Length: 262
Ligand SMILES: Nc1ncnc2c1ncn2[C@@H]1O[C@H](COP(=O)(O)OP(=O)(O)O)[C@@H](O)[C@H]1O
Ligand SMILES: [Mg+2]
Image 1 (cartoon, rainbow, N blue to C red):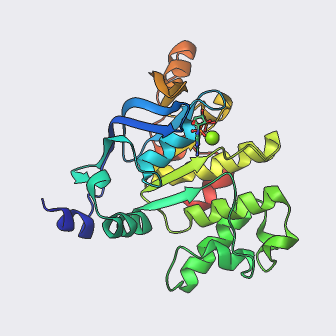
Image 2: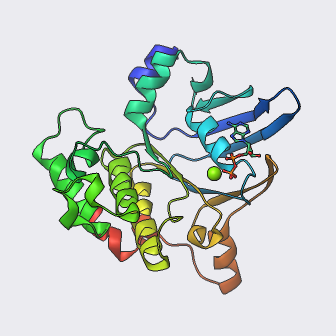
């Protein structure tokens, strides 16, 4: 299949593959390996986590996989689309259509309302898009902030607004960096339930130092010093230990907060 054909019609259930991804930062005195020869795969409907201590290369790996940073070496594929070899325009088009991002910093547009910020990924929002945006804000506990502006919201509320923006267009791939870092425990649990609704239409990739929020992830990649140390499945491990059967549907794995978003 040609590159353009892949871009025009991405495979509905493509998987992501990273091959020997490396990112170095070179200064006159030293070379830092932020990510070193990391190879992994994530399925199209997987909830994947990346854990590790601060400075272990989690964010760098997320940015390499999603193409926001260019690898020093290594490749990224989405099914048979060689993403890391695509032109900047091809990458941009693919990202716009297939990706959602939730960063540590919410990056809201200051002169747009919260609702308008959430709708930014959608070119011409229809009424149903507006309805979905409001439902997401509701599930995230900030529906009353819809008409307000970012400077009228707290830091945690802005982060939650950016989560609704990342989910609103039902991206095939949702990349999330430290979603619970600025939230209290209860709110953190609630937003994770909403983020996990992403599994109904695509993959969810979450960077965190808090392994607890990944307890029902399909796969967790543990990083240390830029190296992928181990890959494990907390969900399967916990089930095996407790003798519990695998949930029969994605919905079964979702919490109450997300039930209205199906
Ligand atoms: N712009 C940069 N210049 C130099 N070193 C960097 C830069 N960004 C990140 N690093 C280094 O790369 C390593 C991995 O960083 P990062 O991916 O942010 O880790 P994490 O997200 O796990 O905290 C760290 O040692 C960090 O200091
Ligand atoms: Mg980080």
